[in-house]
Amino acid sequence: MGNSADRPAIAFAFEQVRQRSVQLAEPLSPEDCCAQSMPDASPVKWHLAHTTWFFETFILEPREAHFQPFHPAFRVLFNSYYNGVGDKHPRPHRGLLTRPALHEVLAYRADVDRRIARLLAAQPADPELAALLELGLQHEQQHQELLLTDVKHLLAQSPLYPAYRDAPLSSSAPSAPAALAAWIDFDGGLAEIGHAGQGFAFDNELPRHRQYLAPFALASHLATNADYLEFIEAGGYRDPSLWLSEGWDKVKSGEMAHPLYWRRSDERGAGWQEFTLHGLQPLDPARPVTHVSLYEADAYARWRGARLPTEAEWEFAADDSRLAQMFGECWQWTASSYAPYPGFAPAAGALGEYNGKFMINQYVLRGSSCATPHGHTRASYRNFFPAGARWQFTGIRLAR
Ligand SMILES: [Fe+2]
Image (tube, rainbow, N blue to C red; front, side, top):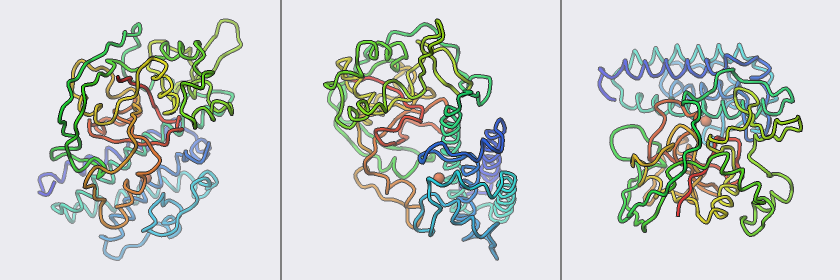
């Protein structure tokens, strides 16, 4: 990244990624962009502003001569969780920020974009600047996925079940009859786990290290809606022996009785439907089941006489061509707690808060989803969510 010949590449990437965020908001009204459907989800407007704040705070502020913030209040309003930067606006109240208006946030984006371009033109060969820009773009791509998952959750609250857009989100072919998942065997042994090579990786994918794996098998395909419906119809949500204690509590309290966006219609013949980014659709039996918690994934696996893979098994097997749907469908829950790899060292300063401080009470998901931006996918990628999270595109690959 360090030489000037690479400058156009990062400048081009910057333009592309920044434009894509604005494009993702285009099907939405300003009202859509302001609302927050739950504390875990953020308004679209907040995503657009916070990703801009990241570049302003971590690149422009330390590097721009005579730095002036676009607006002094934005430093607090659009700080997500960086205590090293200072105060932050409470996360559950992001949806109450009717000001700044969407058009002001778009002006904020344009201003920061101009200033970053100017900085890059003045310091074309600065490897540290290039690395920070790359991190900022990877961060923005993570928020592009969150923007879509948060919009889906928001629109799902409306009895009108509005479509985010009419065409299906995924470019994958219409589903064929459900492929019968086969068991693919792996010998295991001493495996190298973690990011290797020169490309970008987050700090949580490092350092690469060795792990011993006993022989194991993975399902060739993700569990489908039809597979999961069998579990429901067989009384899976009524059998406490299948459930982790916290999950059973949520089943008993009525919080979970089927995947998050499934609806059972009383209208004649409609049966199960699923809310999607292109509206309410008949449940497609061949598609991978998605929007399930770790509790549900784990109970389903137990009911099938199987288990969830560990993250090391998943990564070890990831480049095997006999495995389908590893990327681009749903994030796959693993049985692995989100913990530091041996020798993990977070970055210095406030950016060290990016990943390390979240390594508690969460589980690792592997792969990528239909909402993950192109080029933001790799076998060593570690996504993570609490066991009860269901609003991400989360799915199930069985292991044994
Ligand atoms: Fe962020």
